[in-house]
Amino acid sequence: MSKTGNTIVRNSKYRHIFGTQFQLRDCYGDVRLGVTSQESNPIVANAEFFAVPWQVPGSILINPLERKGAVPEEGPLIMNDTEGEPTINDIKFAPHDDHLIGGACQDNSARLWRIPAGGLTENITQAEVTLTGHAKRLLLIEFHPYAATVVITSGADNDIKLWDVNRPDQPASQVNGYHKGLVTSLSWNGDATFFATSCKDKNLRLFDPRIENPLVGETASHPGAKSGKLTFLGNRKQILTVGFSKTSEREIVVHDVRNLNNKLTTQKLDSSPSTPLPIYDDDNGILYLAGKGDGNIRSFEIVDGDPYLYNVNEFKSKEPATGFTKLPKTVCNIMKCEIARFLKLTPQGQVIPIRYECPRQNMDFFHDDIFPDTWDRKPVQSATEWFQGETKKPNLVSLKP
Image 1 (cartoon, rainbow, N blue to C red):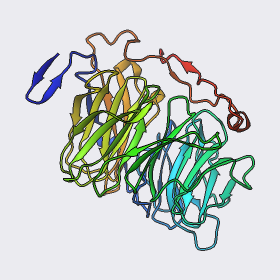
Image 2: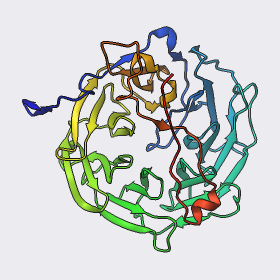
Image 3: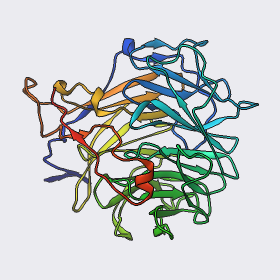
Image 4: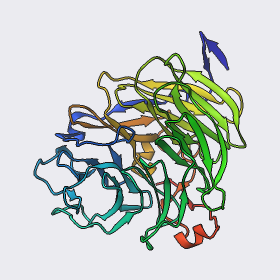
């Protein structure tokens, strides 16, 4: 380990990872983005599709990844099925079902739509499930990764509700009255028993929604005026937050889950006005930072001891991002040592794939040191089991071709 200026250089297998944009023929164009919540990421993707809120109010574009080039302006869409077609403020794919997508809507409801095999051939106007119970517009929607039918929603009423979509008449659990401002980010821990929130009231909170008093931890977060984001660092007992200092510098803080007041490390970034979106790859222990307005993507290796994160590399681009999403590991070219793939949405309506590779001299065999067993993206329990307190570990599978 050595120092270059103020940067710690570590002899790591990820020290030389690099990002590369795909060629133009492998990109997607003419994406006409609609209105979304300021806090939401307007592009999401899975192993088959990417989706964005479309320019038609209350609609979502579902585009197959295999269909490159310009997106047809008059193509089929998911259309909100209520009068007035209220804005869809946030969208998420179910992590364990490539054909299920959820939307947080302006009319205080959440909706789940089923995508037919092969993608859309006509407009879908009927939601499979509608969840109503918030007093104000919805801003965030998330799925439980391992329990098949658990959905979590957050609204402008500052409340959080957890649902079993098989019983949509009322929430199965609620986290109400704790937030003094809008929830700006939500993340599950490694086994999805807890979740953490960042909030406009500048506090970080930790909740166990299956107990009577769900708030299990709270601490002051970034003091800057702008809102922040967060992510659990997989199965590590750590939460990483991104926000702004009092002097409007962007900064990263790693918190100890066992004592949220214990800030393990704080690292200043720069003075850019945009809030970076933290995306953590638990397989490789790498954090990627990219945000609206940023052209570059920073990457850090996360470790268990001081200094907790090492600056690995920075992908540089002159084109700013409107949105940014990571694809499942199964889409990566394993034999080319591709450890991550992203989609970057630009203000010009382009969706550009970006691959991250960890170069090796010999590409003729499977490198299991950079491709550990990964989640098979299948649920392991029902919503009823999870709400009753059961916790089951996800199934891991090898990526070896």
